[in-house]
Image 1 (spheres, rainbow, N blue to C red):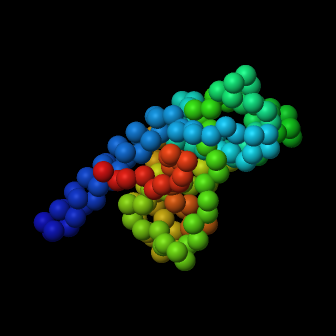
Image 2: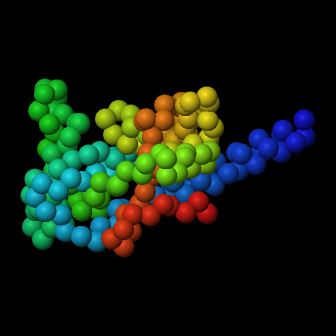
Length: 171
């Protein structure tokens, strides 16, 4: 029984440490080292309360001023009429290129991997806390929710840094 309690304690400590690192990622602006062009595919990192830690696919419509802001058209978000794609002005600190796909054969997903989960029309950052048969339990530090998803809803989380994609460090 003591070993089980120690394992549970260790698991909670690891998840808490990773969650702390995820919150740091969520609250920092995107590290944009490039100027986007019209029609570039991007992801918008939401800075709105309730949406922190989410990324939404969009297309650059045009730059505003000296390229510190852009007008984008979202791929999956729509206006109140539910038919017209939402267009919005976005600060460059909320933009990043679309991350490359990593084939599952290259690297299988494991417990404690930082992932993005596709849900509610966007990608939400979280940490895998367990594998349950063919599904993954994911904890979202910004909402303090833990939800089970199928593998096809997950991708490895990557950060845009110094003009290249990297995996965030865990500690």
